[in-house]
Amino acid sequence: MAHLRIGSRGSALALWQANHVAALLRSQGHSVEIQIIKTTGDKITEVALSMVGTKGMFTKEIEEALAAREVDLAVHSLKDVPTELQPEFTLAAIMKREDPRDAFISRKFSDLPALPGGARVGTSSLRRQCQLKALRPDLQVISLRGNVDTRIRKMEEGDYDAIILASAGVTRLGLQQHLRYRIPAELVCPAAGQGALGIETRSNDAATAAALAFLDDEDARVTTQCERALLNGLGGGCQVPIGAYAERTGGKLSLVAIAGRPDGSQLLRESGEGSDPEKLGREVADALLRKGADRILSDIYQREVVAPAQS
Image (tube, rainbow, N blue to C red; front, side):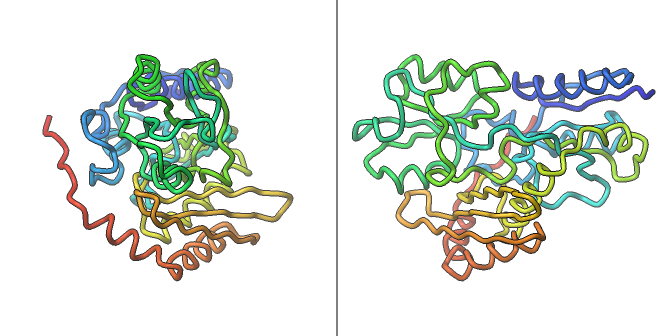
């Protein structure tokens, strides 16, 4: 049995995820330790994530520790992982997926339709913002940063009438009492990979990959591969207004995807079916590009971004 070192961010959710994987590995007889690594995304706390022009803002420093052999594996929320990894890294396992939908959280209101005009809704995501504004242009969608518990506290203190979070994170932290309802994917399309945990290792570390093989879930791998192929086909990162949600029934895949302007003035939607996840993702991406997603994303990429603070 191996001694395995897990690299993880220090947030409550990241540590839950790392400890969850550690417990499963220990059940197989391995010894495990967790090393906390602060990432660029953790250092920039006062700026909307969409304004930070750094790919891999939640993974870069952890990958550096992997490359330096300071840790053996990293546990990530898959939606934070860039669609193209450096050749020296691989996703050795994609674990069984939690509910990928977004969660509506509010003290006073039961769901999106119940919100009054002018209600303040907090989110850190351009993807959520563009879909919320398309559905309800009368809402005030306001940037919200912080860990899950911090965001919920800000809502409870009255800073927001409602906030939108990933259902998976709320569930994993045992905070379901705050969840009013899960927003159907046809109303707010989730982020590519949302709800899935990806375990990253060095590509040449066969022993660690073998130790992790039991954690790999075929349905999660195939559906997220399809979603990430869509995202890659649009040239998008995790902080752009793109949504992708794939489902697998038997050997057949279906994919729904959106791309939109942050103000909700234009929202493109496309879907497709197929058996090859990469091919389906690329085809739906191409269809969105033909509809005008290239112009939307070009405008967004040209905006001014905030340079990460130097530590």
